[in-house]
Image (cartoon, rainbow, N blue to C red; front, side):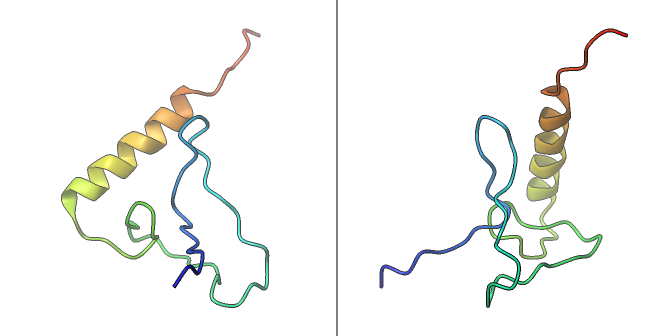
Length: 70
């Protein structure tokens, strides 16, 4: 119907950062918990392939941080 869908776990391909919802936006309440989330939607996922992808994505994000020599 043309309604824009917010994907809380869709990452920027360059920075690997996720978008932020404006606090208080109806329907975009923050989900917390230690269970693995599905890439893109943020829904709970028990899929091993998704878990592997998310772990590798988080590692790539850390690897991209520039740390100067001290």
